[in-house]
Amino acid sequence: MAKRSNIIELKTIDSITSIDFCVLLEFIWPSIVMLVF
Image (cartoon, rainbow, N blue to C red; front, side, top):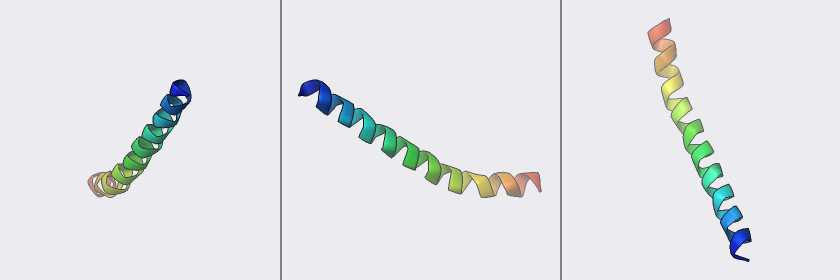
């Protein structure tokens, strides 16, 4: 049971970090485009 809950925790952390990364990309990408062009 403990191992299973740990795996679920890891998966939720992974999903949260991926969501954060996507949000960061959305904010950073326009600034990169502005700098390049």
